[in-house]
Amino acid sequence: MNANYALLGFQGEAGKNLKAVESLPSNLSEVIEIPMEVLLSGSTQEVNLSWNSLATFPEDWTFTLIDAETNSSINLREVESYAFVIQGSPAKAKGHAQKNPIVSATGNARLTLAINPGTSTTSVDAQNGIPSQLELSQNYPNPFNPSTQIQFALPAQSNVRLSVFDMLGREVAILVNGDKPAGKFTVNFDGSTLSSGMYMYRLVSNGSSITKKLTLIK
Image: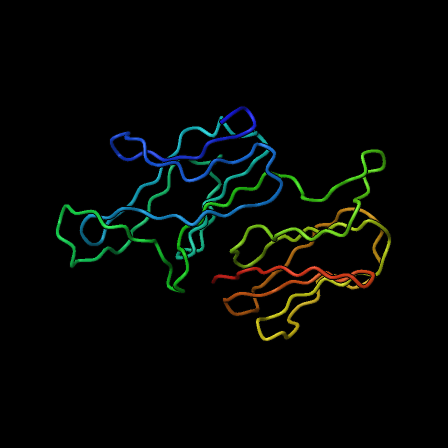
């Protein structure tokens, strides 16, 4: 490891170092999401997560803990702990830890750590600030409830259509439809009228298209 990387790791209750789960480049250019697991002993337990320093990471990075069960989003730079209750397996003997993924009612990971480096993957002309190619970023936050932001970038003025589709290919929302100048743009998508699940969003411009997935959890 060197100065170009930041280390993400965990400690147990007694301060024992646990295995680091990620080593992240300090020039990270896109949002990453890390599903989380815990070790349980016994059945129902209250788990308390705490953190006291993000000093090894760049100041413009944001860290969000997403709890899909309670629809909570916790900014790790604003608070220093988060407590929640999970169900273990009563069949396990007391005192024997079990590796139990924390899952929500939907069957997906209940807890996700989202890391946003505060930058875009768009390559930009240094002199005029115009992107060199069509770009569509991963929405943030993701999963989300009920709204999320989507960023895209255009290398030249063009007619743009940004739409959201369900997994059957039906268009359920039109976010942008019209001419846009070259540059970067951010739009808000409100999914409050839609059902929970996975959707796709597609950017179409000058005969080119980019499609990505997003997840709505209610």
